[in-house]
Image (cartoon, one colour):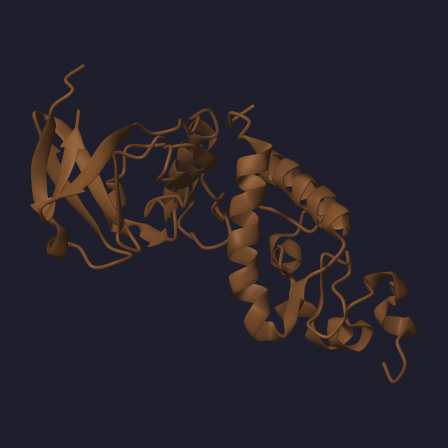
Length: 116
Length: 131
């Protein structure tokens, strides 16, 4: 174990702080589902403790740095068209700013998105 | 521990969001101006001793300039360890690459500790610290 485990709640707060600054200008916000935010951020803190980087908890690591860098949260810039089409990021941690009911947004892979 | 506060800098010396290193009785300290509120932390990173005033301060979060470990300046808590580098992809000379991989292996055993904080107060235009 290379890293002492950080306080998960403290790290979640700081990730929330930094992510908000990144996703806001991209037209996204945290999902209004607070329980989902809490759960996903916790998974990211665990992944960061393991790999040193808060990867997306819903996408597989491929042990290929160039590809894995595309799933560092918030990964919106690397999947912009896809996420704009489904109005959410793959996890659902972030949604378009106009989304009020994230439960109605299906998690569609790129191939199943209309016009994709 | 002394209950005495010591004047270290005048309040105008650090712009909001800025940091300044000072030395007080042999202690290396960084004063941080977080939106007009002052915090004092140990100068050396809890990971590998880099001078933290050369890092970046965003709100209450300080990022180390060397390996990007992050700390909460209000309580010194280590929030993350170093960000892993991309050894092997950017360095082409074999000897240098091998050396850096060895350093990387050693660094995996370095823990990131929380850093010390000091009580501060602002009085008569002076930032004061209690050691």
